[in-house]
Length: 347
Image 1 (cartoon, rainbow, N blue to C red):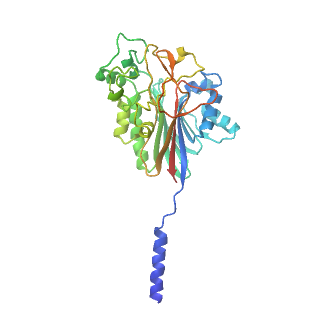
Image 2 (image 1 turned 90 degrees about the vertical axis):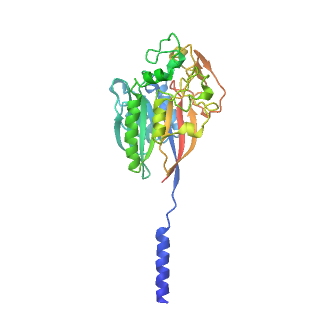
């Protein structure tokens, strides 16, 4: 009997040791947000940035166009303004691309430092209830912006060309003359190291470049693509290295869900400040959230934050699509639309 009791005790201990404690799942909301020169272009733009962060209940925000005007610390200014409204966030000073988080930032560093306004990528290691997230904020080089070439405009001077450039090799040559690919290559190298460390990897950025998933045969004659089917370098590179485009993963059809983020129809801004190629339709999706697949991270929802409507042919246009929007509050602070993504995080 004693031997049987001993066996039963061992069996019970074994069962208890092998029983995994139930995992807790929490929402993790990410906002990619080009704030257009810290919200200074639009009257009351800074306050609007704060209001939209609160409205969307965003946990981690990737900011583009952080300038620290007049020697200020924009990160400190954001944190203070949110605290005044009863919301605790963390942020550290950065240039051009920045990170704001409800969760503590353990480390922040430049993956691709800003130089001569050719873009940047900032990394923050964020502790979300014990789960380490490597979160990257990008704002890539705006020059040699090759999405304008098929539309008949130069991508650095924005002067009208004699004719649209439709040769894929020529478009790619000019595209690679930018520093966007250098920044993305640096990001991929760093992010894969973070993945090897067991950290969750998420990127949010204004890439100033379109997606190969959007310039496809089915829409080659729409939006002034002028017949071009374009394998845009950086999204191709990201996909090859395992990164998932959250918007296109959730809405795989660019015909029903084009997901345009630029140029946004901001009703408070004159058209002259919104239309860079006034004789063309340059609507595009250039703002992104990417992530590396992870068993502890599940994509649950994706929406566009910003006004319905875009700018094309120097007009404010409203195209009926199936894109899902979060309606902004009274003031929209930027010429971009933002990308809001809700994940489920297992902790």
